[in-house]
Length: 636
Image 1: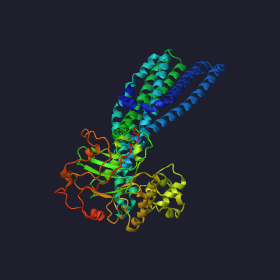
Image 2 (image 1 turned 60 degrees about the vertical axis):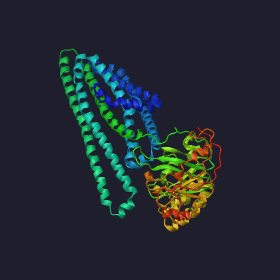
Image 3 (image 1 turned 180 degrees about the vertical axis):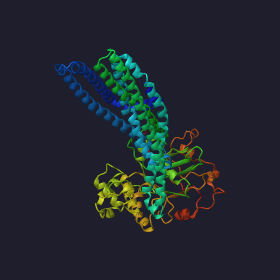
Image 4 (image 1 turned 90 degrees about the vertical axis):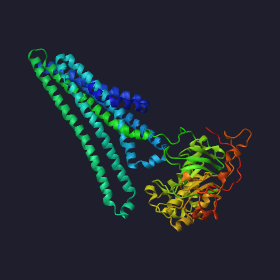
C-alpha cells in the first residue's frame, strides 16, 4: 500500500477524469479483475498443497498420501490457467474499447477547435498525441488498474498465508517493505519528467518526418536533403537522451527492488533455519513460507511500478490537455441537419472580426449582400480578410460584431450541419484524399449514385482524363492527389462541388497554381458550377473571365478602412435595435451619410479591381439590388 501512495498524487486525478470512458465496460473490467483474483487464489492454494505434499508425503515417505493433494493441485492449476486466459481477454477488450472511445472523443474535439490552432500546431506532434499518448492513458486507467488491483489482492493473500504459517517470520519479511516505497518515490518523480521529454521528442521526430516527406520536391529542388537529415538527427538525439534517461530510471528500479528482495529472503531464511532447528516450524511449513514469500515480492514490485505508470500517464495527460483544453471555435453540440434548403440570399451586415482578443481587427464593419444566383467578387491585397469572410460564412468562427444571414436568418441560429449543407467551399488548394478518383468525387455527397458521380465528372470536364487513367475512376490519386496534375486535381474538386449541389458557393482562389492554359480550361466547369448559385469569389487572377454582379474591395489595413456602406437592402428581419414602427430592414441598413462617401485615406481602386468592374468604385461600396423576403428555415 505504501508503494501505491507514492504514485497516488498523479494517479487519482487521471483515474477520476477518464473513468467515465471506461464505465460502459465496467462489467468486463470487474469480471476480468475477479478472474485475476481467482488466478491469484489458485496460486495460494497451490503453494499450500505443496506444503502438504512436503510434510505428508516427502517427509513421511507415505506415497499413498500423494494422489489426493496432487489431483487437487492439478485441478487448481487448470482453473487458474483458464481464469488467467479469460480474464486477460476481457481486460484487453475493455482496454481497447476505452482506447477507441478516448481516441474518438479526442479526434472529435480536434475537429471542433479553431482552424488557426491546427495551423499553428505541428502535425506530426499532434498525431503522436492522438496515438501514443492516448495509449499510455489506457495502459494506466484500464489495464494498469487491473494489474494494480490484482497485485494488491495477491499481496494481501500471500501475506495473510505467511502470517498464518509463522507470524514472526512474516513480520520480519514485512519490515523491509518501506524500502520499496522509498525506491518508488525517488524514481517515480524523475521518471515523469523523463517521460514528458521522451514524448515531446517522439512528437518532434514525427513532425520532421511528416514535413520532410510532404515537401520532398522543394527539399530536393533546393538541395536541402542534408539540412533535413540534420533536423531529424537533432530531434532523434534529443529523443535518445530522453529515452535513455527514462530507460535508466526504469532499469534502475528492477535491480534496486531485487536487492531489497534478496535482503528480505536472506533474513527470512536465516530466521527460518533457527525456527526449524527449534522445532517451531516443519520443513513443509518453511518451504511453503518461502514459496509465499517468493509469490509476495513480484506483486509488491508491480505495485512499485504503479508510481512509474502513473508518472508516465500524467505526462501523457499533460500533452493531451494541450489539445483537449482548447475551446471549440463554434459548437452547437452536434445538432442534426434539419433538412432546410436555402434560396441563396446572403447578407453580411456590419461584420467585425479578430482572431484573438489582442490581435488587430481582420474585418471591421463589413457589409455587402448577394441575391440568389448573383456573383460577388471579394478583392483586395493578401491579408485583407477575404478568406476570413468565407470562414465566417461557414461558421468556422463567429463574428465579433455584426451578423451574417442566409435568407434573412442569422446563421448562428442554424444547426451547423444545416448551414454547411447549403454552402460549398472550393478551396484554393485542391484538397483530395488518398483513395480513388471516384471516392474523391463522391465525397461531396456519399449518397449519390454512380450515374450522378459520372454526370458531375462530365460537367467538370474531368470524365475524359479520368477515363484515360490506368484504372479509370478506380485509379488511386495518391497522397493529397499528388498523382494527378494541378488542373486535374482542380477538375476533380469542381466535380465534387457540383455533386454537392448547394445553393451557395464560395470560390477561394480557384485558379491558384494553374498555368494560363489550365486556368482557361477549368473556366467552363467553373461557369457551370456557378450557374444558378449565389457565388462569392475570391481571386487575384486579373485574367479570370468572369462578370461579377458587384465587387467588394477590402483594404489592406482594417484599422484605417473607411466605414463600409451597406451593399443591398437586407430582407425584412426583426432588428432589436430598430425604432418602434420602423421598417426593420431599413433600420438595419441606415448608416451616417458620411459613410457613403470616399474616405480621404481610401485612395484609388487597385488596378486588379478595375479590371473586373471597368470603372473605379468606392472601396466596400456595392450596387444595391432588390431582396426577396423568404420564409425562415426550421431552427433548432
